[in-house]
Structure formats: C-alpha cells, structure tokens
Length: 382
Image (cartoon, rainbow, N blue to C red; front, side, top):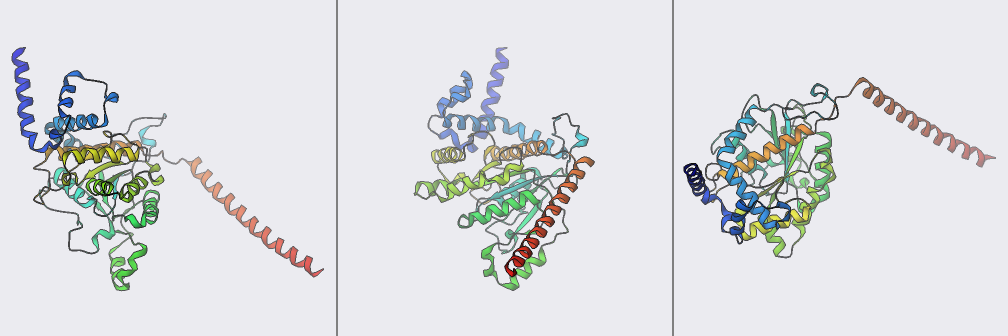
C-alpha cells in the first residue's frame, strides 16, 4: 500500500514538473494556501475569489495531460444532439435538432477571436501551425468584414461549426448590439457581410467588391451557443488608467438581451493574459467577472492563443489547449439543451390563424380610419 502511494506521489510530481513552465499562477501570492486546500478539501463557497481562481487553474493543470485526448475523442465522435437529455416528457425525435450545432464567437476588435479559431484548428483539427482565420495583423482588408464558418475539426462528419465574427467597436456599441441581435434572432451564414454605418469611407467600388463576395446561398444556421472573447489585458490596463469604457462595454455586450435565446449565459474567454503579470492577470479576471455578475470559475476560461514567438500555443501550452477544448465541449452541452421542440400541425394552424387575425385587424383599422375621415369631411360640409 505504501509503495502504491509513493508511486502515485512520484507520478504526480513528475506531471507537476512537466507542466510547471505553463502554470503561471503558481508564482501568485497565497498560492501556498491553495496547495494546502488539496488536503483539507474545504467548502468552495467559503473561499475568497482569488483562492477559487487558483483552485480552478490547478484543476485544469491536473486534468490537462489525459483530459485533452479524452475530450478531443468525444468531439470527433460528436453529432448534433448527442448531449441532449430528455426533459418535459418529449422524445428526441420530437426535437428540432440541426445538422450541426453552431457556436458564435463575438467580441470587440482585437479581442483575439480569429486567433482563437486558429488555435481550435491547431488543437482540435491537428493542423499544426497553419492559420485558417485571418487575424487583425493580416494583409487583407476585407476578410474581417464577414461572418466566417469554420469546421475546426476538419472532418466531413463534424457535428458542430464555429463562426468568427467581425469585431465590435466601443464607440458604436448600440449598433453592435443591434447587429448581434439580428445574428441571434435571424441566424447566420458563411460569408455574411457585416456592413456598418462608418463603412461609407470605403467607397462605392470597395463596397461593390464586398457585396460580390457575400452570398445568401450558404446554409443559414441558428446560433446555439455564444462565446464572448475578451482582451483581459486591454480591459485591465484601461481600468487602472481610469478608463472604464472597455469594461462597461463588455458588460453591456455580455448581458445583452440577444443572448436570452440561449439557455445559459455565454461562455467567457479571456485572452492576452500573458501580457499581464501574474497578480494583474488574476485580479483582472476577478474584476471582469464581478462586473458581469458571474462566477470566476464556471464558464470562464483563460486561453493563451499565441506564444511569445508568435506561434500557436497548443504544443507549448497544454493547459491552454485543454481549457479551450473544455470550453468547446461546454458549448456543445449548452447547445444540445437549447434545441426547441418541432412545430406540430396545431402549432402551425395557430400561427396561421394569428397572422390572419392580425391582417384582419389591420384591415378593419384601415377602414375605420378612412370612414372616420369621410365622416369628418361630410360634417364640415353641413
């Protein structure tokens, strides 16, 4: 028994040593208290936000080596509706399950959405360092102005797709929220053009070129789950400088009523954390989550998309790779809980009747207005 315990401790030590270069949080203050919690197993709700964050990061590091391959295998086998659970006495055959679950990435310009898509290809599609999504540093002026559908597994049988969207602007937040609402209500399709009020500066010729690249022939998909991508470094530095605009805009985006179509809150992805010190990174995460009114550990993932050398982080940072994979897995769990029941004949009949009554009421209101004007005119004659 003692030999088994020693062997287990040695394996845990070797695993911990291998991951040490990627466990940036272990240099944080009070990390020693987090280590003691492994033995004491306290009530998590009674911990401070900092200790909860440290504990969650340690969980990811512990699970990452074997969990990454396990979740990757599940995602490869996933078909839309696989994670559906029976509720409300309705069978799976009566649910409106799409051919592919759709995950929408949204965020402000420079938040790292396209880099996140490239990391998904690298981690899930085993594409190596080949970039598939055009990032802000690219040479193209037009790619980021479209909604782009990505099959990040690079599989013909993939059960889900990821949409990269055009970045929002802090100075045009109301317009951005209206655009988000249209995506959530009307659905999205590949190469969907995202023109905005300030795009008139492009000129008519450039707009015509953009219009020619867009096509409505692609399949329109209902958004099943959203991921809000946030540049934690930008928000934290602006907050410390007294600029609250990025933080307040992120709050309005995350709490937008457009997301009410989904069964749960959007998944929060924090990027560019490597540009901050350890203490700033933890403090920034707690700051953002408190502002959004959400837990610091549930549905929140700190992901490093690029290394300091500009390469994708999958090979060099297994913790970020696992965090991203778990985020996608969580998104699919949420997606399969959001499928609505199929409309029955009675539902369609009631819908047609409601529209018929609406048109009849509008027609009689129109007639009433006309006769009212005729009556007033005749009254003036007498």
